[in-house]
Image 1: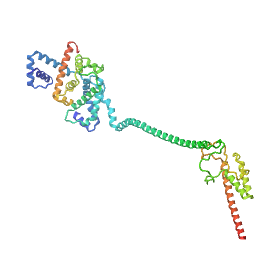
Image 2: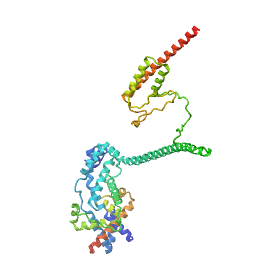
Image 3: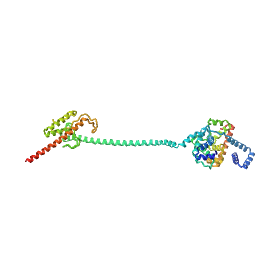
Image 4: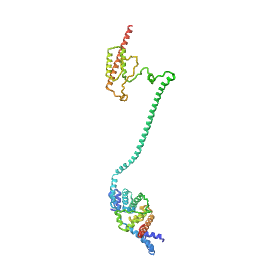
Length: 181
Length: 286
């Protein structure tokens, strides 16, 4: 069944269609949350919250935007709420220190050294840069879709993405030279 | 073209945002400059690494974990309402807050009532003490100022409070022991009749039956002597006045007394009528 048809059925009250729709977006929601938040537990909580919101507010979705963009907008909002709820005493922008959780998913990532490096580097990015990078590379959204998802101007999205890549390149270069300091 | 513009074109090329002509122009510039070539290669590596990020998957189905919650919330909306009602007992907090205030108000009113009552009682006591104290002063002061002999107030007759009683006021209360004396006076006044002694004996026998009350014998007292107050049992009343427990004997005494009184009254009336008839006859004779 196509996504558009599923959405229509779910909006008309078909419970099975709604559940099927949620299953189809479950992995992408979790993946975005995982790379934005940086650990499995927060990602699971955020993904649950996102799916519950979609379940309750699906009737408010309009077909003007892509469904994936609408979903990722909810993901980014929930992740921002998580960031605010944490009220970190140390700003992520200033001190990007992530203590990796030794879970199964993360162990899989640690198998490859390069992915570990880029994972650490992503964790050191500012929140907005991180979101833009995740949406661009993991959800394969265009500039315009990222702008819609994050409710940002198009030029701002480009600027964030270019700077994020520049920072990642510098971080990875430093790491290759003698470790990320 | 400035370095900034070249850097932007590099970035856009990584995202596939350059047109073919723009892409050719960029590649021409990079080929000429080794630094630009190095920069471009580093950015491309980063982009490739980002594209190759492992697709993480949740360890369990998140949809399955939230479905029971979602279905219960959707199917039983009343459950949510009950939950809200359960939260309302935080309104219980309000109730709790309000209930102490109510109790405080009651306490305040109780305190006020108690203070008013105590002041009223104190005022009554003061007035009573002032009255009694002034009487005592008069008794002590008057003889001293007038130079008369000092008499021990204890030997004097008890001072009568209120107006002097010349004739006993009519009372609605049923007579108790005084009625016996009245009956005897009536019998003495009317003279000796055949029925009267029988009544007296009956009453006396009744008195003898109730020996508990040490009532003085009215036959020995003279009619001139003023009636003495009835001496009651020294035993303190076990019940409040008016609610006292009546024994069967007392009730029987009262019944017999009332019967005697009625009989005496009827006899008196008959005697009066006889006297009137005699007087009428005497007048007729005259």
